[in-house]
Image 1 (cartoon, rainbow, N blue to C red):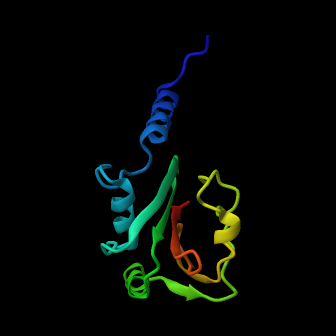
Image 2 (image 1 turned 90 degrees about the vertical axis):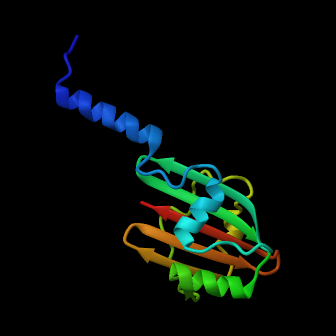
Length: 147
């Protein structure tokens, strides 16, 4: 049997801890969809807008957070853009690796969402923010992820 060095054991324990708890904890976990939304987008939802769906995914230091909210409200969208420093993207919106092919929940219809023409976003280093507005379905889809 091979003996493990102290360094190998330490690295192994560190990787195990990271896989179990992630890189950082956001909020106290009581209402993660609300806390994570406010943390990443620097604003609260007005009372007349609701969280319809939420999901998050973590792997080591990478994390994805997605929300579906509604109804669409232009005053709120303007506040969201200002607070989160988002810009409106035209037809030349970037294609970002990591958006396609994830194990998204069933409600996150990526074929539909990624074809929406009203898109806001920001990329800051390894952090990405995306907002897609679906006026026909009266929904807003939001994604925040770090790589």
